[in-house]
Length: 226
Length: 226
Image (cartoon, rainbow over all chains, first blue to last red; front, side, top):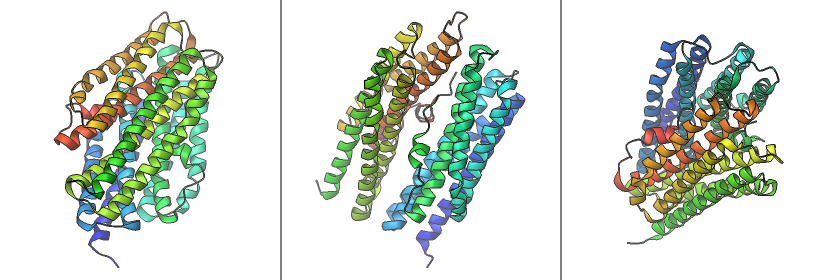
């Protein structure tokens, strides 16, 4: 039976889906600004992050309001609390996209990404995009089938992260320390973005099944760098 | 008037204080393991992080239980929700201390920190420690006086972070890319640790005063790297 509580919860869920879409688009555009040294695009990603922050603040206050007015218990209560945790993950993902755009802005008119790592950065952004798209469809449709392949995506991100370090640490890295510092941070931003997206997806799966995926700890805790 | 709700909320608050103490100690010991290349100490920090994760999981389930049983509204409700957000910050701080210890372990028997940046890393860890100690006393005693100097501590951390980058990017950095990658990540771990500690403190101040400090956005969103 649908009631006022579930209608409001649907609106919160829609807002989470919207946030998922926005942070996915932000990271995709941040990556483009980085690779193309597109200052205008970088600035627009940086400016647009405020909207994501506001959506998160709005979602939090709706959730608290819903708790106060409807006093849900059991699964309904867990859903509202989980939505707040997801909003926190999504806000952080927006921050990470903004960080990528800020590196692009800082290095303009150069690109912060030397040719040797360009392909790997493109792949990291593609995996990030795939994971956030799945997270969105899991939130929207409780489509848990999408969750089954998340571990593989997450492993792929970890491998790409390691590949970045092996490129940086190879004897013939010709770009010196400044580029190495940028790439170290960029790789971390993509990886943390993916970690939070995986966490969002797993939180839904947990609500539905009561079980975490086998490697949720590593996904939520994040990887540990090189 | 004290009642069952406030007694349980006190227990949650005590647990937050305990987590603050644990993550402060973890980061202090992680730093020591890093500077002294002390493998045993690094291993003990890594192992001890599980306790922090468990405390957070326990706090979350107590909080949800409290919401279900007592159905708080208004300020009481906001306090419980805020406690969950603080626990999330504190768990992440534990992860960051573990990340520092993992760098120490990875580079053992060498130290990951060359002599030139040793002093700056020591200062970062001292500032981190000062902030987390203040956060603990703010949570324990709603001691908002401690909150007034947090912006200064946070600025100091940002300055130290910039100093690390200027050391790395100076012409005469003699340690090559591997050490630069380690230091880039370590500096970020300390800075994020401090950001989360500032966020914990500001969440309490917000509950008490209804106002964020002037620069909460930057503290919660984190800085943007070099």
